[in-house]
Image (cartoon, rainbow, N blue to C red):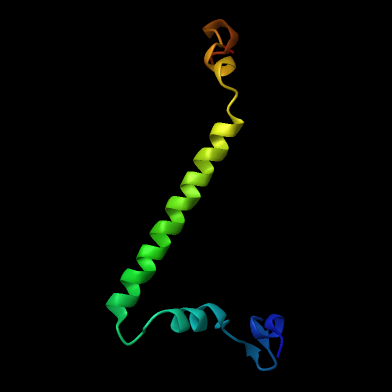
Length: 83
């Protein structure tokens, strides 16, 4: 059975729940000790979120145009109530 067939939402007998993520989780964490599994998963997700945030921050810094944005004068912006 191919990976595409295994993760399909519909099978020969109608709807089937994809179990790939659940099976992967069960292989990675000890389900006999749910508190430890939860804590371990929580640490991994926290680390992943922190890495994503750091990458987004670095990307944002690379895209920033530096002093040109900060040097805009008030006259160059349009007040939404004045238009």
